[in-house]
Image (cartoon, rainbow, N blue to C red; front, side, top):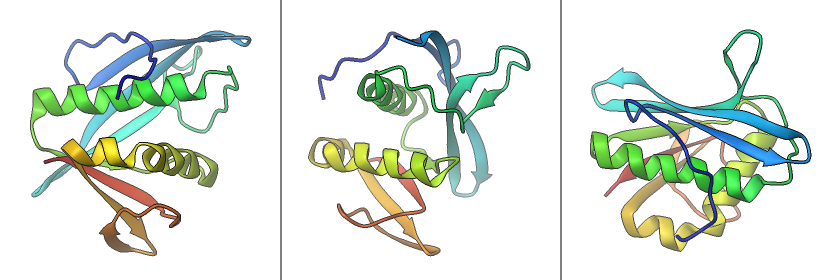
Length: 146
């Protein structure tokens, strides 16, 4: 996948920082991988804008900086980088809002063929885990390097 993306910074390959550039200005974005289960090992992918007052990540904010695809490509790139450094760990992805979940689903669907080459993708629908399929609405996703 050779998509345009932002450069990012990381110290430990578990937190990535980059800046969205657009009509709303320069906005700091953060992607974090936090271990949420030990057996099997599962990491949660958290993503959002950094709140300039609290320093916390806000996964509900809608930036509308006219760079959605570039931002999603950057987040996807961190999944690849994380997997290179931490191996075949399972990554759990759930958006903070139904709109955010739908956005992730659209991104996965658009590049399913390319993603499936290196990663296994599962969708969670009504509490049931199944192989990801296009045109099916999911509540969350699991991604794991093959």
